Length: 465
Ligand code: HEM
Image 1 (cartoon, rainbow, N blue to C red):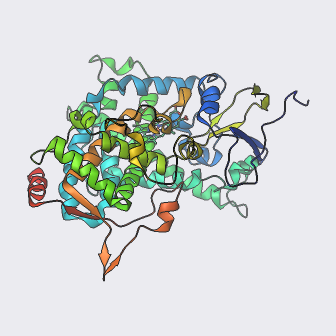
Image 2 (image 1 turned 60 degrees about the vertical axis):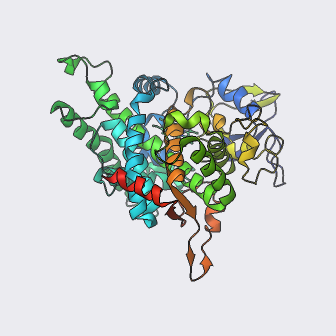
Image 3 (image 1 turned 180 degrees about the vertical axis):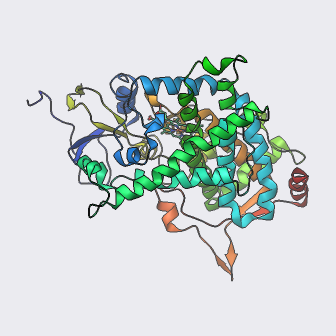
């Protein structure tokens, strides 16, 4: 039956996408691209009852990742896990994550002094450790921790598989039934091997946490909060134990690569814009002084640093296409027909590079977020207000992401100068690949971390004692 309304238009044959809403077809699926904040809010927020699903991700399912609530369809199983996650990890309870962030950022600084060339691996461990400690209360090392390696190794294939078109099974669903021995079905063998790793990641840290809790050796964590109830609570947890275990693994799965990508991007922004870096340092010196490290209380007095963090989210968004939603039933928006089952993509890249809101969008310009009184300019949209998604599926880890980034950025810039390395008189520029990468924030780049002064070096060394 032909619908009464047309589909939204297809993409114009011009590089600049200026339509609010576009439609493309891919492998028999309707894909709707939302290019403006208004259209995205109209659909994903105001009509969230219809737009809170997730498209099927078959390769992820074959790899065993469908247990994560981030990929679940809108329904009871998703609701139960999300409720549990938010019950013990809520923006109004910063005390659940801030002490852990502080501990690990302070462990990071002396390591950065001793091994500046390993900064990418150190940052990976910093974020991995904070999310794992928060979830399980385990004793996680900042360097070479087996749990961080396990989590990383399990997630890497997922990140490979999530790239659209990486595996044909997501384009031709019938392929999921092909046997492993069938010519061209190597994806099935790969999926089986990866699934084994996924299952270890799902249960091993949880089992270790449970053991530590029973022995009374665990630090407070999401898992201990869920399990620590009445002494004889074994049979009367508010939530099923499987739900607790699976929800705990969302901390690393949702929070590690995203925060890491945002931190790398921030460092890169400072590296490429030494004048902005110097301005942040001048602000930190003025507000914090030289005798102590910045803490959370300083954040409201460091507007230029906040502006730089906002601007790095805008300049190179961490999730430029957000995470796709899926529509449940047929709908009409502004005269256009949106069929049930459409994949809804919020094009954050386009929203954050909208010339009307952010003139000269390709330029890294933190000043656009500052008003004439030197405060954060409330008239300019905070890119972080859209960076974490929309509606009922909005990122539930935003508060932690913001506070980890702030503390890491402030502490690093208080003590270190970030410089492009010079070798044989040649300045090593960040690779073009990195600077233009939209999706992959993990391409390596080099950065020298030099203590800013002797006093800074002394302060860093005192943290190691
Ligand atoms: C810079 C860091 C981060 C960015 C940019 C980010 C971004 C996002 C985005 C765009 C979504 C999809 C929202 C939507 O569907 O509209 C999302 C979902 C999610 N994020 Fe984050 N995130 C970050 C950090 C974190 C952290 C630290 C955690 C956990 C501690 C986390 C946990 C999750 C979870 C569990 C979901 C799935 C929500 C659902 O499907 O109901 N994220 N995130």
